[in-house]
Image (cartoon, rainbow, N blue to C red; front, top):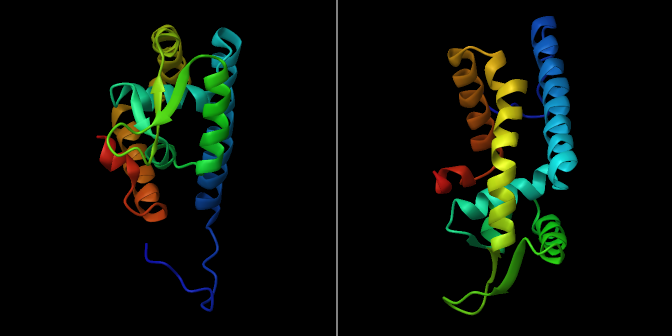
Length: 164
């Protein structure tokens, strides 16, 4: 759907669109709260911290901080703050980039790898139970297409495209 200039008349949501929008907001809020609570309860790890470990694992355990922030679609300051907590917990370490010495690289420690290996199975089970298994494969693929379109629209150069 093309962008509508603010000077044009508002296209209000239909009752069906409003219902779908509210379901998306409520469902994603509850889902992310549940996934976060499960990880905190079992591993003392937030969903954001888990995602950082996952992103690092997909890049051989190390990634520049700027790339990490882009991959998570979070601000650099938010990622820096979270990584600092993770560094204190011994899950990651930061250092100068060996390639050029200018950038800061975040690397997963053995403790981080171990925690990710232990948390992954429980996290995937929760994702499957609370989302994937509730939809048909066709519906789940449609969700992916819609959310990819949203990401492509809102984030120039959609960082997920670089990781795939």
